[in-house]
Length: 174
Image 1 (cartoon, rainbow, N blue to C red):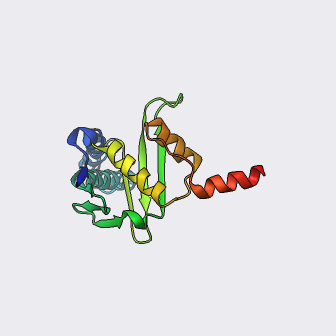
Image 2: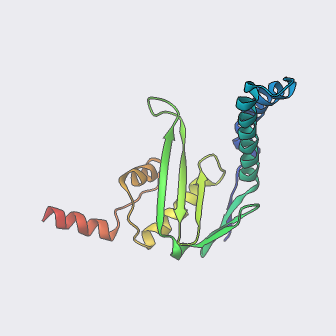
């Protein structure tokens, strides 16, 4: 069974709005100034930065991660693929937006020798993708850091220590 993870317009609308505001507040003044001034040296690079941000948001929206029992691949303008048995590392990071660690998003990153694929929790179908990635990591007995394990547990995906980690803990306690 093939599943798909993508970013709906609703998930990236804030990024589009931030890019548009940045372009307006830097590009319009830069265009309205007459001769080249010191302000241009500040405004033009900032406007270009917001244009790049808008472009990357567009690429993100048009890119999807498709996976099945054999592996996963990116479709859209970015191309990459990884077989589940080739995953070498997995990390699930939480980025808080509030001081009290409320609000925020998670980013799941899978790496193989040939590719790196990341997705964040704003994408639809993220829980299913995270669960499948966790299953692959456990099947490969990949070492997982404590923060990643805690983040998987926080979204309801139990992540037991790997056989190697259990052996190391037993050896340390002996």
